Amino acid sequence: ESVALEEVESTEESDTLEVMELPEEPKQSKQSSVKDTKRRVVTEALTEQQKATFSYFMPVKGMEKQLSKAITEAKRHFEEDETSCSGNIMIQGEQGCGKTTLATSLIKVLQQETGHPSDKIGKIHASALNKKDVGVLYKKVAGGCLIIEQAGDLSRNAAVTLGLLLETDKEKTL
Image 1 (tube, one colour):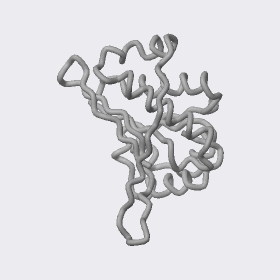
Image 2 (cartoon, one colour):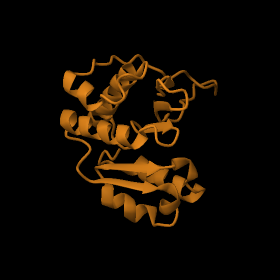
Image 3 (spheres, one colour):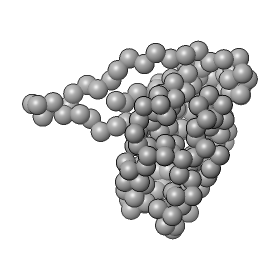
């Protein structure tokens, strides 16, 4: 399943913010062609409290819809998925547009709604993560949330290790 949320633009042309879920591996049909694995997701409207939490982002066209989808899918992940391999969220945008603020707001809302992720929240720049033992660091935030700044700068080794950890993690790390 891959739910790509549309790109939205803020009122300023230079600030672009995109919220999307990381795709799962495509499923193969018997004829070795990629099968469409999209499913319809029924999203809940944001509550007034959630709108207040995301007040900085609410003026962005389409943001409320994207946040509703992201929260709905993350809640489904915590309820249904066996590992942390799916249900993760990637936030992209220009420097200074509020990506980390959005991530921490999403975490707060999910904690209020589901009790997940736990209070173990780590934030690290990809270049720093590349120099660390990814497994040791991951254990420190297991069941919580790991925010990776500039994730595109992850080394191949760190990205592969992180992927393997997500595949086997049953603690619902986000």
